[in-house]
Image 1 (cartoon, one colour):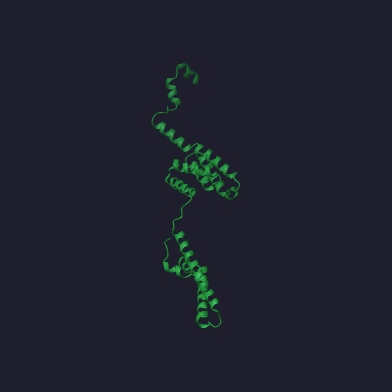
Image 2 (tube, rainbow, N blue to C red):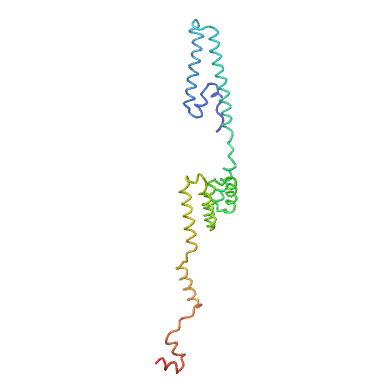
Amino acid sequence: MGKMPWGTYLWPGLSLIWRYGSWLGLAIAVGFTALVNLALAASILWSELFTAGLRSLMWAVVGGIWAVSAIFASRWDSREARPQNSSPREDSFALAMDHYLKGNWFEAEYFLSGLLAANPRDVDAALMLATLLRHTGRFDEALEGLARLERCEDAERWHWEIGRERDLVRRAQTRRVEPNPAAAVGVAAGANESGLLAPAATPAASGLTASPAQRAEAA
């Protein structure tokens, strides 16, 4: 957010109205306007009702409020105009997310492991790491990480997310260990077509090679 026009600093509350549309800024601006009008009226219209010392005090208050407001608004605007530095944690998590979305599992795991080493209760990092381990087939490590996360004090708030990720890990684990009947049939059919499987002997074929004594016994 850039700096505002310098003219907005010349009236108390105007900078807040200009930047934020603030009701507080409007109240300050209206209150300062009423104070200036009172000082003008006391000095020009009702000079006989106010002593010179009181009129001077009014103008001193007006000037003080104006100066303090201008300095405060200018410094506040300068602070808001400066870019806000993100925390190291946010930077590391953003890098981990970027590598995760690109499928760079090793790099993503590196940053997530660093976050969890600094704060084992980092739920976002732990859940992302569990998902990463699931994608890479390291199911036992994923389940162990989820179990550690559940033992944290504030893990109750993330009960649904942890349970969902655990279910996904177990489903993926089950799909890996279950045999695939269709694949087995396909392999057998391919072997048969290629002649790797010997055909079963038929009775007729067996009879051609049997001895006379065996044929007599069979009769």
